[in-house]
Each structure stands twice: as C-alpha cells, then as structure tokens.
View 1 (cartoon, rainbow, N blue to C red):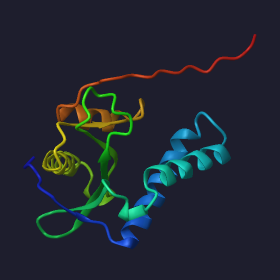
View 2: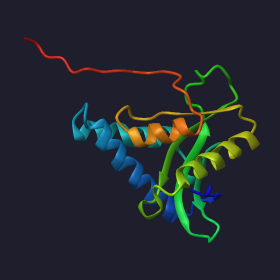
View 3: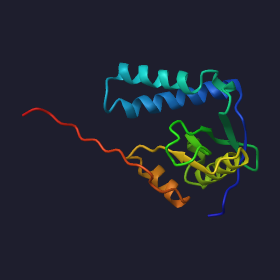
Amino acid sequence: MNAQKVTLRRMTAAEYRAATEHREVESVRELGKFVSEELAWERVRQGTAQFLPDGLDTVGHHLVVAENASGEAVGNAWIGPDPSRTLGTVNSAWLYDINVFPAFRRRGYGSAILNAAEQLAAREGSTSLGLNVVGDNEAAIALYRRNGYDVSSMHMRKGVRQR
C-alpha cells in the first residue's frame, strides 16, 4: 500500500459540531459499559466543557480536518496539551481524538493523520505525543503500534459482585 499523505486544516464551525457529536456519542458508548447512560452523557459533556471551554477557539488546542491530495476530507483530529503531564515532560502534546471517515478506512489514512498530528505537535515545540485508547479497540491499538507508539500506562478493570 502506498503511504498516504494528508494536510491538516482548521475545522469549520459545522465540522466542529459534527466532530464533537461523533466524539461524544462514541465516548458515551464506551463509558456506558461501566456507568449508566445518563451518567456517561453527563461526564462526557463535562469533559468537553472542561477541555474545550471555548470550543473551536480554545487556546492551545487544534481541531483539524485531514484532507488527502485530492482535497477530500478523509478524517479529523483533536491535538492539544497533555492533560496530565505525566509522560515525563512538560513539552508533551496529547491526541484527544482521531477519526478516519468510513469511506477512507483501511487505506493508510489513520497513519497519515497520526504523522501529520505528530508534525503539528513538533512544530508547536512538543517532544512527544500521547494518547489514550480503549483496551478492546484492537484496530486502533494495531494502528498505534505500527506507528511506533508504546504502552506508557495501563489501567485494568474487572466487574465484581457479592456472593
């Protein structure tokens, strides 16, 4: 497969609304495995308000659309400062979200968007790019590993019940 290349551009207001809706729905789906749907929505919306208080205009955050060589939007990403600063450096950026649109999946665009996000972070002075991935998202884990990402922390969970 030929290596894809993408260009990142700032999202429009409409693209931001669509990306936020998609991210929140996906987050609720994942969080809903552990808490009620109502609580999941509350937490997800609190997270959006906390990390993007000014939405698309939140300082230090890049909400971008990835376009291929033909100018088609193939996905999007949200890159910003590391929220925990636990990666050992204050110059760490964080990939809050990455999305390859369905029609462009399995064609190398995930790697291309990651590469472009890394370049953006480096231009901003970051020395690393961290991210979080849900433990059962095997496709995403494989993508990150193929692109040189290593596990830096692991949280595990098991449901328990009284007997």
